Image (cartoon, rainbow, N blue to C red; front, top):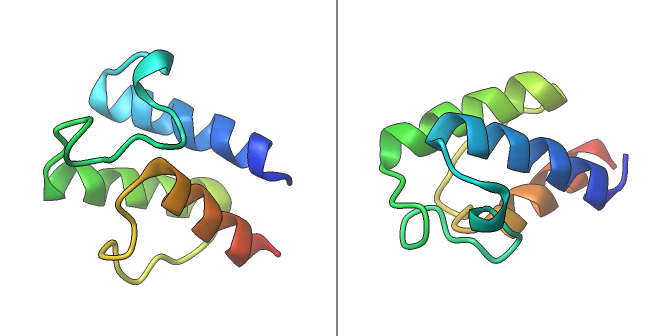
Length: 78
């Protein structure tokens, strides 16, 4: 699975969880400052990502942007 495919799935999950449009969820989107996501929102998104990609994300501290999340999943699937 390439990064574009990963991004499309991640984007869909974030859009559903936070009720946002595709134009609001790009690779450079920051969860807290751009999407106003609180820690519970991020936790729920991470849980969905873990289920979707069958990966384990130990901490969300290093994941501030959508790109960070896509890169992390791509690294886990490599």
